[in-house]
Structure formats: C-alpha cells, structure tokens
Image (cartoon, rainbow, N blue to C red):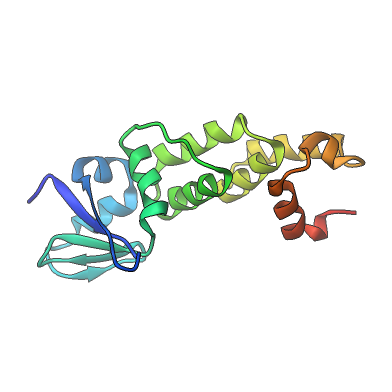
Length: 164
C-alpha cells in the first residue's frame, strides 16, 4: 500500500492530487473510514474508491479541495470569504476536527457577518451567540457595524427575511 493517496477531483478534465494517507486517516474520520474498507471498488458519500488504481474520486474541484488538504497538513492558507465557507462545509463533510478548529479560529478574527456565516456552517454556538449579540447592538444601523461591502450585499440578499 502506498504512503500517498491519489485524489481525483470533479474538474473537467479531472485533476489528480496526492495526499499522505496517514494525514488523511488521522485528521478526517470520513477518509479514515473510506480507506479502511476492503480493497475493492466502493462508494461512500464522500467519494468512490477505485481498487485498481488506489485512487479516490471526490465531488469537489481542485480549487475547493486544495485548501482542505493544506489545512490537514498544518499549512497556513490565505483564502477569501467564500473559500473559508467552502472550507467550513468540507470540515463537516469530511468530519475533520483539525479543519473545523482552523475555520473557527479564523471566524473569531473576521467580520461579524462572515463570523455568523461560518458559525452557522460549523454549528458553533459560541460564534452564533457572539454575532447575534453584536447584531442586536447595531440593529438600527447595520452598515455602521458591518460595513458596506460586496459581502454585505450578498449576505443581505440571502438573508432578506432577517432585515426589518
């Protein structure tokens, strides 16, 4: 068995990435379960394993999965708000405590709206309480606290029912 695993993305054409098996197994319950299955072709919610090639095909693109793999390896990542949201989703999908804690640490230092979004994706009660309290303090003038930005515009459109 190889020390690395080939991960095939959903890009068109597919991109093949390699990742250390030990890191995947140690830091993701889903990859640990997927790689513990008998050596035959199998499919899981996370992806499919090809016994002939020893590769895993996933539904994410290279752009989505590379920050996840880098975080698993302990590398620092520099991402935009949308990419942090993708990383939060992947921390849940692949059940990775390491990635979830990295996203939480980032959320505490980000804007209230971004912190709320990440807290919602992670199901983190402390982040949600923090952002709810901050939002109540500024409910009459949200742009004063949250600032006018593309992110605010996107958030307000998605959350129109929350606004007075």
